[in-house]
Length: 252
Image (cartoon, rainbow, N blue to C red; front, side, top):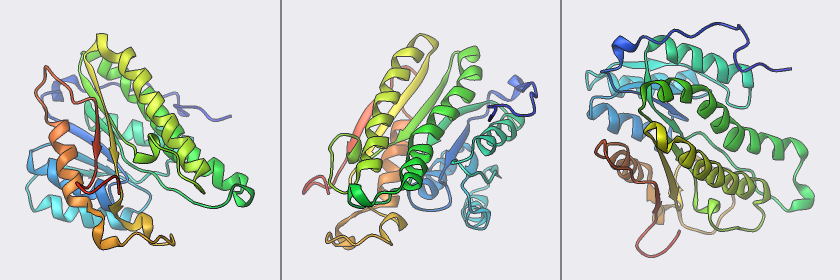
């Protein structure tokens, strides 16, 4: 049986460091996560980068280092409960994490009769279960300090169903419902919850997919990241709760 805190280690947060703006970004090795980390580093956030690929995280960290902003690398496999717990513990050792960006996600698309149980479980684990666990773990210190923010990078597939996407769409609809529920739960604690629903973004997500939509017409990760950064950096007394980011020409 998995434990959320397998070492039973008591996390002692260094609240003296709470003046720093520390932000954790999952899926930070490429795409939206990478450009969002760079954009927030420009705004002097202290960045915690996480993804499965430590090598690619190092590449992101090099770009942040040029901005003279503190940066930390914590590799993690978000399909593994114990790895998520370790990510939490190591992040807490750095200081009070004021913002958690749940950006990591993936999809595998096929006819329902060809979707394997493993493919289904993997997408639900990374796209829905991992954000739940990270929210559960990091919310304690935010509730105690009466401030914080959770950002969920969702998808247009969290609002509209598409064929051959049963597991992916299920995970994204679930994530939208989850974020709406915790938003109401966290209001009294001063914790912001932001849901972002981008249309098609030109990332490595599409590399193995056979799609007719031209990549050159998709939105760039950099431009989408700038829009998300704007939401994160909103004034303390307001929150941009849910946004759709699309091309002017349409949802894709």
